[in-house]
Length: 321
Image (cartoon, rainbow, N blue to C red; front, side, top):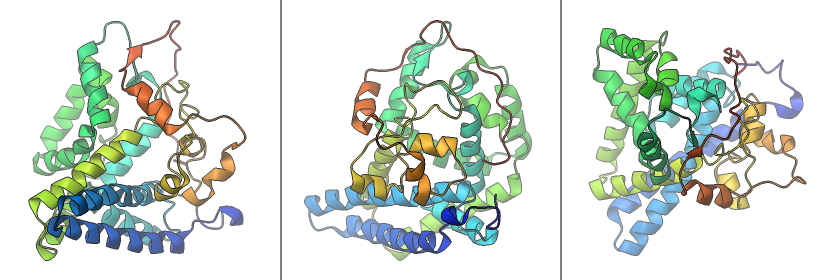
């Protein structure tokens, strides 16, 4: 994490802004969960879960800042904010950080390639994974991974990581690369953070008297909305670690609700730049694909890898991510 002295004054971490946004977004999310659980009509229920799907993406975008250490210049504030924001997903903060920073190292390499299939790969599995992303089922992966990690003894977790190495299925699904990131993970801290997220969710269900229909509706809508963007910002882009993403054109309201998350190429090229300044790194005069154009293409399914296949060197871990 860069400290405040090392960072340009023009791009200082907007810690106060992020804290205020977090307070507004989390309060709004809790209110919408309550409203969806107590709505008097189907129209208000649908309105509440749609609104939640966007507000919880604002929370995820703030979590994304904390993962990169650019939510707040005070490390303690950054880490605790990350834990609280992760509880709204819900996931564990350290688990999310390891997975996401690993994504930055593996981006568009063979270890993380969902939009193309290579000779010898299990094509039906590739399609199942692809439509799992598009349908929103992909959102279930972090919470279920957290539960599995919480109840599985450490020796078995390490054994699963070892077994994934060299597995064709694990490699094709990107599970190999992701699991290897947890080899030296702080298991005790990760479990405490996961337990915190579980207790947080149980507390809001009890204190806000949330109904199962209200909670499930909100998170199903959020999962679909969140998952729809998670590979649209990479699909069919250049196969390059830092340049393999899109600066997507999208409605300004959505862009701001997602805190410039659609400027994803700029983020991958400059991962330590806070969301507030990402637009400075986007050539707005240059033609950019719209979110909808890439998203609709994705529904046709993954494609055969074009020939000749580009080769990629192993990506070294970068301390600045």
